[in-house]
Length: 184
Image (cartoon, rainbow, N blue to C red; front, side):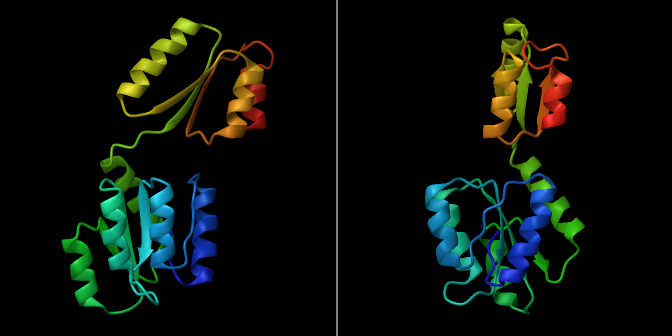
């Protein structure tokens, strides 16, 4: 999430995190590029008009680092030449501020789906063969799978990773699946 308006960054970050997204923020185009040099992002929501490097310039540099990233540009200003440039450079979409948060959330979900980004799934079961088969099938469908074979290991995985889906055996050894679900 890239914007020079700190209030917008804070409030939008809070909403996206409530929806389960892992969100990093940057307050300038230069800062966004620096972050993109250190980490791969699936979706970037970036303001077009910022002091210094504008959002379109930053977007072009980020696309060089990560060609598969989906970038949603947003602006509160009438900057048709920058909007046109962003779309020509391959921006996923442009939103005019203020916008409904539901529109942004739907757009992020659609961008992730078009990117082929699957979810992060915890598979916790004592049956190692079942876990291996689930991991094989889910991985071929674009998901990232993390496996645990007992309750304490599964609970530890939930502390170190953010999961979209939990597939947990109810009668897991050590800590049962329902208790793990409650703690998560």
